[in-house]
Each structure stands twice: as structure tokens, then as C-alpha cells.
Image (cartoon, rainbow, N blue to C red):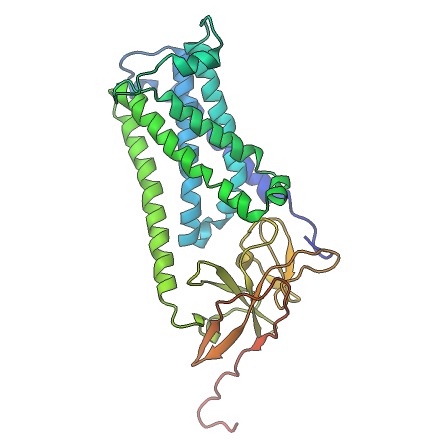
Amino acid sequence: MSVRFTPVQWNRNKWIYDGVMLAGVTAFLWIFLYVTPGALGYDPAINPQIHNARAFGAAAFVMLTIILCIGPAARLDKRFLPLLYNRRHFGVMTTFVAITHAGYILNWYFAFSGSSKLVTLFYANSSFGQIAGFPFEIFGIIALLCLLVLATTSHDFWLRFLTPPVWKRLHYLIYVAYFSVAAHVSLGILQVQKNQIFTAIFIAGAGAVIVLHLAAWWAEKSETASKDGAWAEVARPEAFREGFAKITKLANGDRVAVYLADGKLSAISNACAHQNGPLGEGRVADCLVTCPWHGFQYDVRSGCSPAPFTEKVPTYRLRIENGMVEVHPDANPPGTYVDPVPLPDPPLPEGEPA
């Protein structure tokens, strides 16, 4: 946000995002509960309480799968970026769905226990020495704890309190949660359910996560491998559009956004100081780029936010060598002004005087 732009913590796009997400979850649960029971063909038969629990459990697995597919899909195709911008909302809703699933389980299987339902959950099954009958509940508990940590620390307060690097590493717990859910499903319902629909959904979801992550890794590896020498190639000058950026990944893993503003090139870190949002997806106006996530702005020449704001991001040196725009991999300290590099004049048509 800045003195010139209205903060966009909540806007129409976010409300639409959440509305579509809520409608999708509602539709999934309705179809699972009222349309598919005959197709699922439960064997052995189950009661409505277990069916409800499975509906919310299946919804949580599908939502978690989509969450983990959004990141690599956005790296492979920018059209998925709008889904990435509000992914935290998706994660919080997934947590509530998972809590509902756990509530159904506790209130059915352990409702009449003489001890606390939570205590009974931990000691009811202790067959840790075998695959068949392994206490898969423990993996569900681990997944739910991970989701609760991610949901409760999703607010910007925790980002500032923990600092962006720590906050980012903490949110890698999403992979622990997904692995735990996969183990929970594999050792649970897939062991007893004879209908193969659940198995097909599980394999398709887990396979999509693995394939997309491998494809994104390979694409980034290929992109990084194309860099040659100390200076990293970005693009040819004629490939830049006024007001927009080209994003390049350095050999050290950092991403740099190279902008064309007023006919001159400038480079800053692609990571917003607020929440590591993708600055390279923002558009430049009067040398200020606006982060598409929450509206924070930076001068692309210095990496500084306009007064009275104090956020800063690193800048990078640029040069044009042999008809190619190149960026030096060593970042300048955040807020360091770097003279923009003017684009070379286009060649004159043959026969015209210089």
C-alpha cells in the first residue's frame, strides 16, 4: 500500500475467491453425501455418521491436494497466479473442514468411552508393529496439528513477529500435513474399503502433486542452467514491455524482477518485503511497482517504498551485453539506488541517414 494507492487487504477479487471456494466445498460435500453413496457402494455398510466423517475427510484431502498443486502450476503457467495470491484463505478453510472430520470421528467412535475421547483416541489402538491394523489415527492427528499451526499463524502479525524467512519455513509444514494425510488414508480407509473409487481419487491426487512439483523443478532447473558466467541473462531488450517485468531466477535460487519503466531498465528482488509476494507480477506506474498480493509499493530504481512507508527490497545491477539484458547475481543492500539502464535505440532502416 502507499500514499497513492488504496490498500487492497480485502477487495472484490478476494471476496469472489472465497465465495467460489465456499461454493466448491459445499458442492463437493453435497455430491458426496447425497449423490455418490450408491456409486461408492460401501462394503461393509456404514452408518450416516461415518458417511459424514468420510465426506469431510475426502473434502480435506482434495482441498489439500489443490493447495499443493497451485504453487507449481503457477510457476509453470502464470494464469494460475490468481489462485496463488489468496492461497492462505484456502488453507484456513481446509483446516475447518479437517476439524469437522475429526469431530465426527471423535463423537461417533469414542462418544461412549469411559475416559476422555481424546485420551481414548491415543490408546485405543497400539498395534504399531504391523501394517494391517496400524494405528493410522496418529497420522491424522499430526496432519490436523500441522494445519492448525498454519491456520493460526497465517495472519500478518505472525509474519512480522517471526520474520518472513522463519514464517516461510514454518509454512513448509504443509508438506508434513500432506504426507501425514496420505499415510492416514493409505493405512485407514484404503485398507478396508473394497470399492476402488477412493483408491483412484487418492492416486490421482497424490500423482498430480508429485508430477507438478517435478515439472516445476525441472523447468526452474533448466532456466537456471541457461545462465552463463557471473552475469545472468534475462532477455533481449526488445522482449520487454513498458510497465512490466521479466522475472529471472539466479543460480543461488533468488528471483529478480527486471522492469521497463519510462524506456529504462531497473531490477529489484521479486519478493515483497511484506509477505514475499511476487513483485514481478505487478505493474509499474511512475517508477512504482505495486505488489499484487496486498498493494505494497516500491520504487524500482531504489527498492524503497514511498514515504511515509519504510519497507525496502534489494536492488540489482544491470547491463546490456551482446544484445542481451543481464543482471549481476550479487544483490545490493535493500534500498540502494541504482541508475536505470536505457534501452538501446532501435537500428535505423537500411538506407536512412543516421
